[in-house]
Length: 196
Image: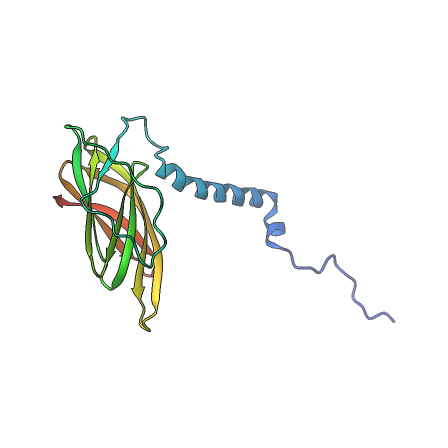
């Protein structure tokens, strides 16, 4: 007498891709592609409605202090040139976050890297002078690394990023803000502070 039960097809568990099917695989690929392209398009100002081009120039007010323990500085150096009489001057500023050892923030305005701000315990407030061609709303992207000591005295680092738009006018100061979400994720924003 045979005690085996009849087989009802393959006993292997179905994988994720076979359960999603072809449509699910295509949808997943499209979502991945879109999520990879949107930050690039925003950073390169691909959504500009064809307005006048905004030119950013950097006029450093202090030599940047290279980080000693964060990732090595980029070899890309922002260009600077003599400001034109109609240009507007603004100041980018970062104050070391409470409890942090150091932070490095790269500032991109209208698709051009205009500043690398490095704040540390020894130099907690840093500023850099930037020149723009006209007042108005400027798109920004911020990328940074923040380092601190945890409760056990172990050095920790976290990357943070942010993007948006900020109004710029002559004599204005723009401050970098670090936001810590409930889950510990950090983000960055750039806000108008006061006229410098």
